[in-house]
Amino acid sequence: MADGKTLVVYFSKTGEQYGVGNISEGNTALIAKMIAELTKADLFEVKVKNDNYPSAYKALTEAALAEKKANARPEIEGKIANFAEYKTIFIGSPNWWADMPMPLYTFIEQYDWQGKKVAPFVTHEGSGLSSIPAKIKNVTKAEVTDGLAVYGHVAQNERERAKQEISDWLKKIIF
Ligand SMILES: Cc1cc2nc3c(=O)[nH]c(=O)nc-3n(C[C@H](O)[C@H](O)[C@H](O)COP(=O)(O)O)c2cc1C
Image (cartoon, rainbow, N blue to C red; front, side, top):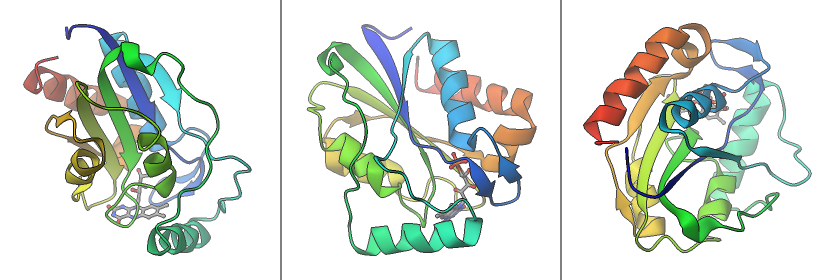
């Protein structure tokens, strides 16, 4: 177990997702909850203010691409008052166009990451991590562990397999 308090932060989308139909719990949310349970961490969901992301998949991909191209920082809800207390922070993201959804940048840029250990995890449908861990390193300047990539449809439909992939990774990053 790592020293100090642990936090799992994630962004995830319900609605229509690639290969899994209409989901009521997002793929990344499922992985985030499993990690939080296994590591006894606190959980924080990054939610945009006045969320008007489309729930249809194709429209969502277009909206996301527009935000990425604009390098947007959508406003998000809530703030973690005791952020300084966390030593290890997992950051969970769906792979959106080989990147994180822009609200995760809004989140990351609000905090001081000095001295934190950051463990990135991603759900995807073929691209894996892309360069998301490097992007997180770039923004946080913190110590960033090897990342975990889980297929979205595995998170959604093969939960025991997903849990096994998580435990193998946690051992590897010495958690
Ligand atoms: C806007 C958008 C862009 C995506 N881009 C990619 C991609 O570039 N590569 C990939 O493997 N999957 C891509 N996907 C699939 C998602 O990464 C995958 O479905 C993920 O598990 C969704 O997580 P969530 O349910 O937590 O939001 C994209 C999905 C969306 C909605």
